[in-house]
Image (cartoon, rainbow, N blue to C red):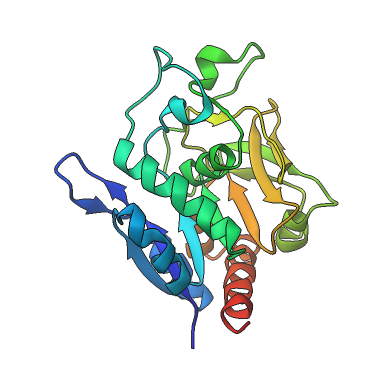
Length: 238
């Protein structure tokens, strides 16, 4: 049986859900079965976590800074309180179960917050060091800026390259990163671009959107999702 990958969806103001097709397509391409996760009540989250084999937390709105002990900055963007509450608990439960996790953009931020880290609510307003453009105005497969990956990381083992350019669609970023996460990729201006867990079997966060590149046929990006589905299959068969 193929592994079932739960994918969180954006919640619109009218209560409807939205998911760009590139997310489930990347999972299908790699051999998994994508399953959209709506707003699940807290008392049902544990049961749902036992049913899915892996979790993919997607991009989306800003995260309420109350989750990392801060008041809202003047440049904080739109937040989604109900989604924040569910994803925060959902990520923690999946980590407790040691099931494979990938988070992209907001999914990286939620992973960091759920494990005790903090964010820049607006990197261009809060960071003292000079910051390059991180919210490109170009097609989603355009490679906007360079990233460097640590060669002694599992992320490098998957990608098999340590310097490349990525797409970029964010104004928030990881600030403090604590255990079990390790920063393994940064942009040339120092912004965190990738993390991995040192305590879990397969937990990664990407600031960029590798699903876009995977769908366009990029081999390193495809290897990310193949490794993810392989890990989910292994966890499923335990």
